[in-house]
Length: 93
Figure (cartoon, rainbow, N blue to C red):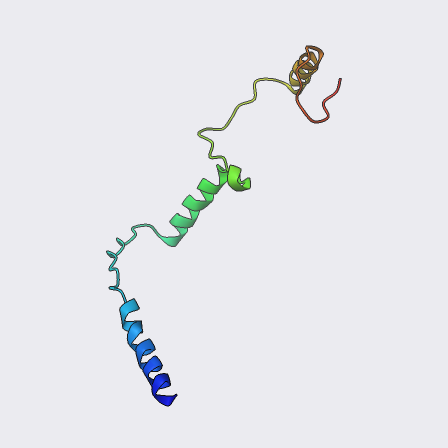
């Protein structure tokens, strides 16, 4: 029993060498020319333009401008409901 145990330990120890792989050498990153404050300012500016909504994150190209008033939108919705458009949910007249 001891001989088989020793043989198993030796075989197990020797097999670890087969699992070793060559290390991947990555090129060094170029040195940054920006200060920490400049990088943080750029990140903050980028975050202002992003609408975070989980997987539906939106990256707008430009700020949207609203040319229609709230009353006009509501009137259009009422007209669509009168014409039989189904918005789903609880939309009623």
